[in-house]
Image (tube, rainbow, N blue to C red; front, side):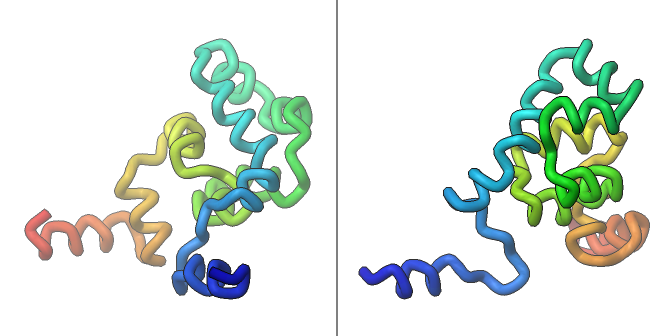
Length: 119
């Protein structure tokens, strides 16, 4: 299989594929999110988000993604969904909030879709 073929296979419209390149880009962001396993780190982040992001050497794009509270922007900035779930929890976001972001609707509209689908 050629590199071009592998590249084409990874393209899914509307989906960010977390691969080795994105893992390298998102290392600092994911490392920061991993730190939230410890309560004292979650508290330190909540006290001073900017200082905490600087401590982990996030890029400006990553900082902007975190500031926006938009999980899709964080994924595009290299965040792995597993680690970002820790950050989403700090922000008080649940899976329905994230689903709403992914589909571009309000949380209430997303909940209505789930109910209509029998979920």
